Image 1 (cartoon, rainbow, N blue to C red):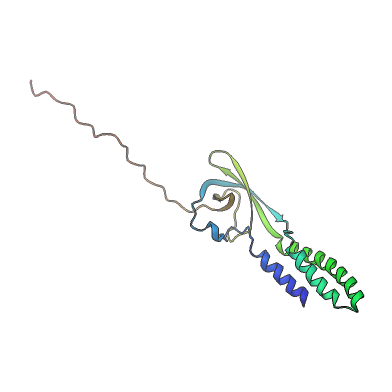
Image 2 (image 1 turned 90 degrees about the horizontal axis):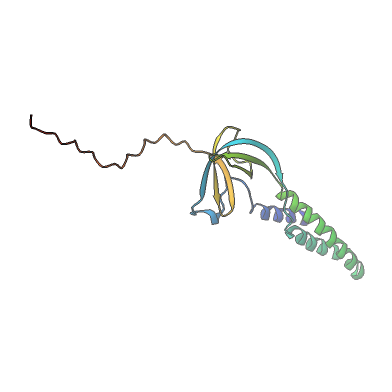
Length: 173
């Protein structure tokens, strides 16, 4: 039962962090972002390694120590408690790493100015393909790639030239 509670706690903490382009962090709301236009050159599947923040190890160690210390008498309980803490810490660390690992994609984008950018993000609701027109939205050092919205062609802006007056004509003949 304690292992299930530990796994649920680690999973809940892992859910707080995501690279999903469809999820915007609260701190990024109502902030202006830089937007770059580009074209997808390539996409490849990658795996984002799970985190090892220590939360899983600490939770596992505490759970293992408590479970182990209740075994046998005072002396045996202390020894088994230490062994339980070590085993619990290793198990908690492995659980944390496993639940925070995620499948992602690396997107190589050619910008309009010729530069290239590579962004790794979780798979979102959109399926991007090479040749797709996309935007890269950058905010606070984080970037996400999404399909470019359709923008109808805009009429050319009016020229700011003064109105030409007709040349004076002579009425003498």
